[in-house]
Image 1: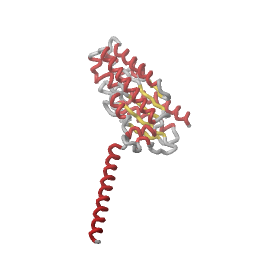
Image 2: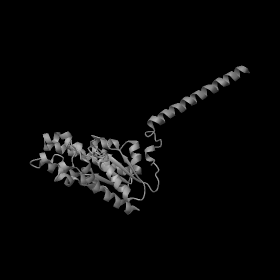
Image 3: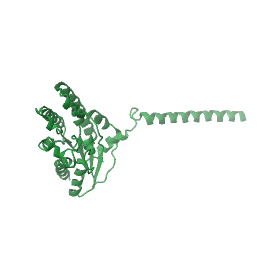
Length: 263
């Protein structure tokens, strides 16, 4: 009789061992391949926010980071200050800008799970992108090649469309404001060729935004055109605090109007 008990205990222990291994395997697959196996996608779950909270998400390159602003605010910080003066509810800003970012990299960034979750919460989205695609750290000016610029623009527009599409998939109602490019090399552009390229770049950008509802193209070319050096940082590329303030003063009233319109 004791032998049977030993056998029963042995078999039962073996079954428990197999069950434990099976559960462990399932947990590993769930952790690493949750989305592919149909497990709940956490990126689809919006982060809760207070009813009176107004959330701004800023995406893009060094202009979004505020590079060149001696005060450290950049246009995003200045816009935030303006909104805080005029809104009766809290303003929360998530600045996801990355120095040196190009459109292909931003297209990848907006696919990240946490970025999607932040976008889902946004009431307003601010974007700067394209300057690094076009200017190539000044190489475009040194070697102006219409064929190369055309290729750069074509790739940029594909990435821009993908960026905007992803944003809309995650947030169908937030207003999006995208700043256009200015020409930091305007004083070296003797024949106006680069000016024409920047204008064309901006026109094509505005056309892509026009495909989507509640997306606004905000021009900046004219802000810097007549007194570019007055509004540039010492690197002669990024805006200084005065330049960023010009940009912010153009955006802030638009966000205020849209927010009040929604209330």
